[in-house]
Length: 279
Image (cartoon, rainbow, N blue to C red; front, top):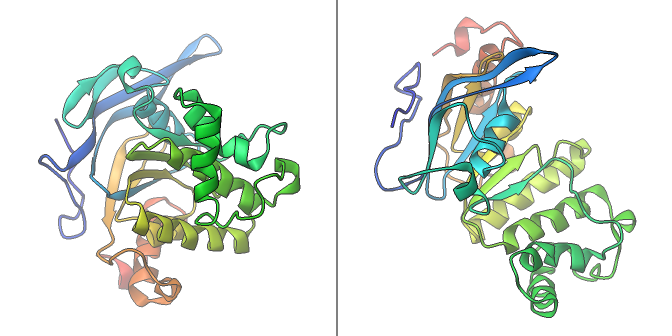
């Protein structure tokens, strides 16, 4: 297995050993578009430790969602391999081995909040009554008590995302794949949801791979950040955040946060990298 070294060894982290739950080794992917082959990912490698939170940022079209689709087993890479707990896997073997949450909550409008939350368990074969009971027990912890009978159209955006997240967590998978889960929310609701996610993971640790366009969100939530290049995406930079989680909100105003933000924006080509924050 090949794990990309960081451009700066003092800030990067390559992880090895039996703590690794997910390893992506030299994955490339391409699609046919208008009778020509378009390469989306180019020799991407990464590793995720047990209960580690890794964020992926990169330009639009750099293959971030494609990478999650490959890891979840929805598609197979053209080259490279995906290993779960050290074992090389096929796409079919990866299906159902992770909990995948998209930006859109994908709640069914004709099902109540409780029934939507229970859906993941039902799909796994749990009886409807047992699934509803398990979901109902978790509603207070997800800030949803009293809304069990409400339908998606009656819920705020933040509450809809919490229902979707409860549905995801109830599947019991230890690997979470999150594709812009808060991207459609307003700034205030997004901040509240980020804090809530931190608290939830502190009580229910999971290994998390998050795709986001929000650099501040990535720094606030994750242990490491991987920056993908322009398409075809490759890992061009790794940032490590050596601050324990969960983090207080005032971490966003700390000098170290500002330096990391400037570095990441510079790597993304969104701002010039000032000398005073250069490594």
